[in-house]
Every structure is written in structure tokens, then in C-alpha cells.
Image 1 (cartoon, helix red, strand yellow):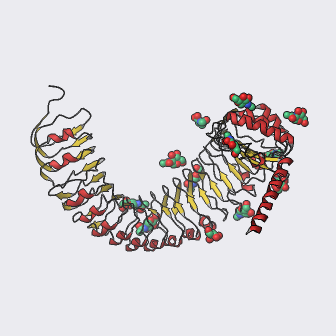
Image 2: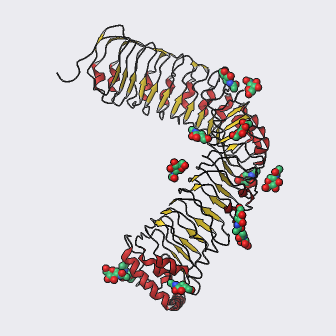
Length: 618
Ligand SMILES: *[C@@H]1O[C@H](CO)[C@@H](O)[C@H](O)[C@H]1NC(C)=O
Ligand SMILES: *[C@@H]1O[C@H](CO)[C@@H](O)[C@H](O)[C@H]1NC(C)=O
Ligand SMILES: *[C@@H]1O[C@H](CO)[C@@H](O)[C@H](O)[C@H]1NC(C)=O
Ligand SMILES: *[C@@H]1O[C@H](CO)[C@@H](O)[C@H](O)[C@H]1NC(C)=O
Ligand SMILES: *[C@@H]1O[C@H](CO)[C@@H](O)[C@H](O)[C@H]1NC(C)=O
Ligand SMILES: *[C@@H]1O[C@H](CO)[C@@H](O)[C@H](O)[C@H]1NC(C)=O
Ligand SMILES: *[C@@H]1O[C@H](CO)[C@@H](O)[C@H](O)[C@H]1NC(C)=O
Ligand SMILES: *[C@@H]1O[C@H](CO)[C@@H](O)[C@H](O)[C@H]1NC(C)=O
Ligand SMILES: *[C@@H]1O[C@H](CO)[C@@H](O)[C@H](O)[C@H]1NC(C)=O
Ligand SMILES: *[C@@H]1O[C@H](CO)[C@@H](O)[C@H](O)[C@H]1NC(C)=O
Ligand SMILES: *[C@@H]1O[C@H](CO)[C@@H](O)[C@H](O)[C@H]1NC(C)=O
Ligand SMILES: *[C@@H]1O[C@H](CO)[C@@H](O)[C@H](O)[C@H]1NC(C)=O
């Protein structure tokens, strides 16, 4: 035991010796600079407690945000998130002649002093400058010297003006990040003399004009990001020649013309974002199998989807062709894209059947082919898509019945197959979709009763089966849908009375039951209702029930086109949230209560005579 303590204290001594030795090695000019810097930063930081303490830690190499070489010369400052707002200390940094990297991201610096630009420009080893996420404004300073600078990150600032020759002298520049500023004028072409640039990020500025072809002179580019600017003209075909390009991000501009035929053929390409432009013409035939993501939505692409297109994209995970003008059928080669996780072909003019091969896309999580002209039935094999969370086929001409196997889609969260020509009954298997939050079957020809088992869909938030041919009564099991906030059964042939238990739907904010054959006693409605309660065009009769007076949050109440009799209850005028009350086409009589001026009240078409109440003060 004693020996152990003895050895440890020796080790401690050795440690202190080494520590002291190390401290004594820091170049004295650097030590002085650091003391200078210490005072400046301590005076200027806005942070609650200054992280440096030269009494406790005499060696600057151990200070937070400082890194040193093996020989204890300072090489890096990484003062991100240091609450710095005053730039006075910046020229002092440049006195550390061994400096290689400066990271001052996430501060509140407003300017780069010219002494900093000249001083640091002379540092022979400076490779990285990161001032991202500050408050720099004014124009981009000119870079003289900086011969080793590889990374220049000024993104997420408020820099403005044009960019022309400011970076022309940077011979080593590889990573240029100027996104999220307010630069104007043309996209710069002088991006470092020797064209070793690898990453160019200029997104979210206000650049105008065409994308310059010269950018492609930087043949080592792996990343081109020019999205969210005001660029027009066509995409330079030379981008297709960049042998290392992995990211091509040109979305949200006004680009027009076709996609150059070999733009997407490089085997290096991984992520291509061309959405929100005005690109036209057909999809490229020669497309690289390396692609992981391809976003082409909101353009004007036309023609068919060539079978070679899907045939080549074996590594694709995301494909979005939403809102183009594609025609023809969906090629069965779709099944080659085994890694596809999100497929969106919505809002085109695709025809023919949903290919059964789609069932082979085992990774598919979202499938959206809404608003096309697909016909035929939903293949029962879709049930093999065990990872499917969202299925959206609304607005097609799909016919036949909903396959019973749909209940096997155990991951499903959203099912939209509304506005089709589907017939038959609602399969009771849907009740097995325990994760389902939204079920929209409206606007089909579905018949038969609503299955009692629908009450098992415990995650359901929105249920819409309006505008079908359903009959029978509303199953009382709906009252078990405790998360339901919208229930729409409008436009069916539902009969009988509304289940008494409906009042238990404590999350329900909208209930639409119009245009059915419902009658009988109106039960106490959920007190959570506020968007609307619509019971119009049914067979309700008798007095308007007093219990409606308890719906104090309700904004729209429609009881029109029934056979309600008696007076219009006074309590309507006391329902403080009510904005619209529709009572037309009933058998009501008597006085219309005094409503505030902003409540719209419709009472036309009542056979009993209604007289207007007295408005304003007596
Ligand atoms: C820091 O502030 C103190 C007191 O306000 C002042 O005496 C000192 O000169 C300042 N140091 C620097 C380097 O500005
Ligand atoms: C710096 O460290 C010394 C020794 O640990 C301590 O006494 C002193 O209070 C610290 N100063 C600050 C400002 O925290
Ligand atoms: C930078 O170097 C140039 C020439 O090498 C010299 O004239 C100038 O004084 C230096 N600037 C600084 C701030 O050291
Ligand atoms: C591309 O990078 C390689 C290796 O880093 C380099 O040798 C070559 O000069 C670069 N090409 C250009 C055009 O700068
Ligand atoms: C850059 O590319 C253009 C054409 O795109 C070419 O005319 C020009 O010579 C190239 N410049 C350099 C420096 O290679
Ligand atoms: C983008 O261009 C359009 C038309 O060319 C113009 O109306 C708009 O102001 C421009 N927006 C910006 C941010 O420059
Ligand atoms: C497809 O593009 C690659 C790479 O650019 C090229 O080598 C090949 O010849 C092209 N194939 C066709 C059929 O155009
Ligand atoms: C569809 O794309 C066009 C561009 O082709 C665009 O103007 C339109 O806003 C897009 N529609 C929607 C709903 O995004
Ligand atoms: C596709 O669009 C282009 C350009 O708008 C047009 O010239 C061509 O005829 C269209 N092709 C088809 C098949 O509609
Ligand atoms: C699909 O993804 C897996 C793993 O994410 C990967 O190993 C594979 O190469 C990808 N491509 C194909 C065609 O499976
Ligand atoms: C589906 O549409 C295609 C043309 O788009 C047509 O040839 C076919 O007969 C239709 N099939 C059905 C079942 O309606
Ligand atoms: C879709 O169905 C409607 C109604 O049956 C029919 O009028 C229309 O021609 C169909 N459209 C297509 C493209 O099949």
C-alpha cells in the first residue's frame, strides 16, 4: 500500500515537471499575444462566465478553444459560441504566426477589420477561416495573401453586394461556403486561381443571371449548391462532365430548358436537387446508378418515364417527380429500385395500372401517386410493403374493392385513397392498422356498413368516409376513438340515430354528418367541438335540443334541411364563439334571437313565419 502511494507521488511529481516543462516551451511572443488576447476577450465577451483563468491554467494551450502543436505553438482557435460581438481582438489573432485554423462561428461579430485581412493574409500556414453564423454585413473583403487557405466559410451572415475578384488570389481554396447571405449580381467565376475548388455553396442569396459554365473548370468539384437564388437560363451541360461531383443542388431558382442528357450520368453523383424550377423536356435516359436522392418536383418535365430510368437507379432512396407533366404508365422496372424509401409521382398524367412489382420495394416508407389517371385495382400484394407509413393514391380512377390484405400494412400511419372509383365494402381488416392516424376514403363508391371494428383504430386522428354509398347506422364503437379530432361521414345513406356515446369523443373538434338519413334524438355532443357541427340534410325533427347550448366553443352550427319545429332557442345568442348558424329549410317559427352583428344567421325557407328580433339597444 505504502509503496503504491510512494510511486504515485513520484508520478505526480513527474507530471508536474512535464507540465512545467511544456509551459516553459510556449514561444514567449505567443504567450504575450495570448495575455493580450485574454484581456481583450475578457473585456468584450458577453458570456456569463469567462471560460479562461490564467491563474488556474497558466498554459494557454489548455484554454478552452485553443489548440497547440506538439511543440506547443498555437495552431487553432475555435471560439464558436463564445458570445463575441466586438471584432477588436481579431488582428491580435494574426500575430500568432503558427496559426492554421480560426473558427469563430456562432458569435455576433459584425465586421472583419482590415488589419485582420492584411495580418492573417500573411500567415503562411492558415488553412481555415470559419465566420459562419455571425452578423457580418457589408461587402465581401478582398483576400490578399492567404496562400494556404483551403476553407472559407462566411455562410449565415448578412454580407451583400457583388462578388467578382475578391477571392481570385486564393490559390489553395477548396471549400467555399457563402450560403445564406444577401449577395447580389452574377454567380462569381473567380473562385481561386488554381481551380482546386471542391465545394461551392452559394445557396440562399440573391444571385441572378445564368449559371456560369466556367464553374465546371474546377474539375475537382464534389459539391455545387446554388439553390434558392434568382438564377435563370439552362443548366450548363458541362456539369455532367465533373468526374467527382456528388451533390448538385440547384433547386428553387427559375432555371429553364431541358435536363442536359448526360447531366446525371456521372458515377460519382449521389444527391441531385433540381426541384422548384421550370425545367422542361423529358427525363434523362442515361442516369447513374450511384444516385441516392433525386428531387425533380415542381417542374414541367414531360414525356414518359423511360424503363431505363428506374432500371438504372438501384441505389435510389428518394425520388420526387411531383407536379410535372409526365404521361404513360409506371414502368414495372420500378422494382429494380430496391432501396427506395420515398416515391412521389403525384400530379402528373400517368395512366394504366399500379404495377404489381411495386410490392417488391421492401424499404418503401412513403408512396404518393395522387392526382394522376391510374385505373385498375389496388393490387392486393401492396400488403407486402411492411415499412409503408404513408400510402396516398387519392384522385385517380382506381376501381375494384379495397383489398382485404390492406390490414397487413402494420406500419401505416396515413391512408389516402379518396377520390377514386373504389367499390365494395370497407374491409374489416382495416381495424388492424394500429398505427393509423389518418384514414381518408371519401369520394368513392364504397357501400355496406361502417365496420364495428373501426373502433379498434386507437391512433386515429382523422376519419373521413364522406361521399360514398355507406348504409346502416354509425357504430357506437366510434366513441372509442379517443384521439379523433375530425370525423366526416357526410353524403352517405347512414340511418338510425347518432350513438349516445358520441359525447365521449373528448378530442373531437369537427363533426360532419350532413346529407345522410340520420334521425332520432340528438345526443349530447362532445364539448370539445369548435370548428363545426353539421347535421344538415338529415331527418331530424322536433325541438332543437337544449344540450347544444353547452357547445360554448363552437364556431359553425348547421342544422339546415331537417324538420326541426318550435322556436329558435335563445341560447344560440349566448354561445359566445358562434360565427355561423344555419337553420334554413326547417319548420321553425317565432322570433329570431338577438345575435351580435358578427354572427351570420341563415333562416330562410322555414315554413313557420320568423320575425326578426330587435337589434341594438332598447
Ligand atoms: C479591460 O477593461 C479594463 C477595465 O475596464 C481596462 O482597465 C483595461 O485596459 C481593458 N483592457 C483592454 C485590453 O482593453
Ligand atoms: C481563477 O482560478 C483561481 C485559482 O483556481 C481562483 O482562485 C480564481 O477565483 C479564479 N478566477 C475566476 C475569475 O474564476
Ligand atoms: C505582410 O507581408 C508583406 C510583404 O511580405 C509586408 O509588406 C507586410 O508588412 C506584411 N503585413 C503584415 C501585417 O505583417
Ligand atoms: C484535383 O485534385 C488533385 C488531388 O488533390 C490535384 O492533384 C489536382 O491538381 C486537382 N485538379 C485541379 C484541376 O486542380
Ligand atoms: C473555363 O471554361 C471556359 C469554357 O467553359 C473556357 O473557355 C476557358 O478557357 C476556361 N478557363 C480556364 C482558365 O481554363
Ligand atoms: C428575382 O427576379 C424576379 C424577376 O426576374 C424579380 O421580380 C425579383 O425581385 C428577384 N428577386 C430578388 C430577390 O432579386
Ligand atoms: C452515359 O453517360 C456516361 C458517362 O457520362 C457515358 O460514358 C456513356 O457513354 C453514356 N451512355 C449513353 C448511352 O449515352
Ligand atoms: C407546380 O409546378 C409549377 C412549375 O412548373 C409551379 O409554378 C407551381 O406552383 C407548382 N404547383 C404547386 C402546387 O406547387
Ligand atoms: C415536351 O416539352 C417540350 C418543350 O416544352 C416540347 O417541345 C415537346 O413537344 C414536349 N413533348 C411531349 C411528348 O409532350
Ligand atoms: C441498398 O442499401 C444497402 C444498405 O443501406 C446497401 O448496402 C446497398 O448497396 C444498397 N443498394 C442496393 C441495390 O441494395
Ligand atoms: C386503363 O386505362 C388504359 C389507358 O390509359 C386503358 O387502355 C385500359 O383499358 C384501362 N383499364 C381499365 C380497367 O379501365
Ligand atoms: C376516369 O373515370 C371517369 C368516370 O368513370 C371517366 O369518365 C374517365 O374517362 C376516366 N378517365 C380515365 C383516364 O380513365
